[in-house]
Length: 482
Image (cartoon, rainbow, N blue to C red; front, side, top):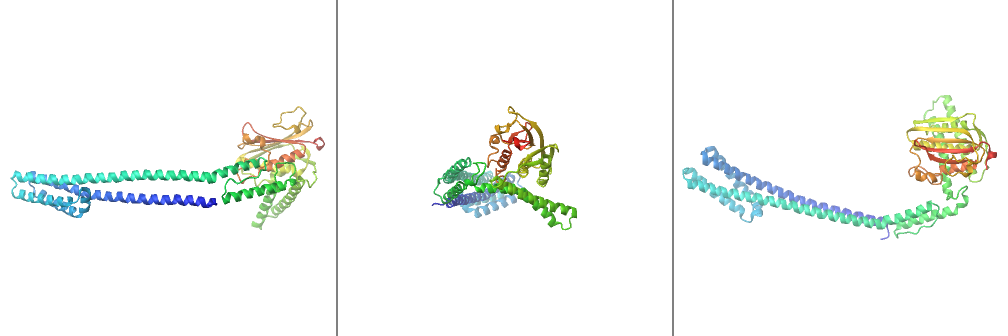
């Protein structure tokens, strides 16, 4: 057997067969107990009838009331009827012939009572009646005790069998767990260790730790991916940590998502409301046009990022660029998030506009995702004169100490912040705090590369009051950039 699926199916079917078998045995045991309870009801009914017969016997012997004698005769007939009906139950409990003995003693008892009725003053006849009555009650009581013991024994056996069943289930579950751990968990754990090594940059081929077809296929696919990463390493730019052209395409999708989303939203509004006001229609069309241009700029910026285009810094107003970016992201902004902007309108820098906008887009979107449905996003910028001895900036940023005037930009949120163990690696590729499937881990890496290209530096830390903070320093004039 060289298929993991077949092995798991076999384990499942084995457990299912065990459960079905144990359930059948348990139902059989319960049926036996139910039958014992029904037999107990019959014996109890017989015993109760004997007690009632003795009660009316005593009343008649004491008071000689005709009504007591009638009730006594009725219960004698009832006992005779029950003894004839439940012969099998009585003989099973007390031995063969017990039902016949009870019927015979009951006949003698009825005859003695008849003789006593004819001679009520004869004490010997009264004593005979009492003796026969006592013997009948003793037989009934003996039957009731035997029945209780029989039911108790059946319950004890059922409890003991149930304990055996539980022990068997526990043993098989442990064996199944060991089986799955040996055949599934251990190879998966080994593969996880190998993949973590690959994620840290060690492009080492995997060797299958299991002969199962699924693991062999998965290992082969992963090794094929490694071969592709190695084969396409010459297309990577600015970092040895991007491993293939596929990761670059992931970055393209990550960066193009926002303008494409805005274009789709505007187009959807125009399609759903053909009677939209001309002013709004014009605004939506302008948004589509501007977002299309922005998408084109992103493509051009990514081409430039890959070394195909020239870096083109131009003078631009920082406040206008931040406000434009916030407008682009208005549909992404949660309703409960408050944005506080503190950027002087006159503050200007020389930078590549689409690239710097990529940085703002990424940081603002990350802040929105971190805060969720409510929070405060603070964006501020101010001029700062630094010198070579300035060490107030967090993290190890030797390239930031230019000794020239810079603009320090701060983007901070009041979300959960960055886990301490990720602070030193937050700008590495594929490192993300988002859930699996909700982040490629490339956004901050691309932003860091863009800031570096401007001759600036970027750092991340957590605010004392809670939340993440990203600080960027850019030279005011590109001639001051290294």
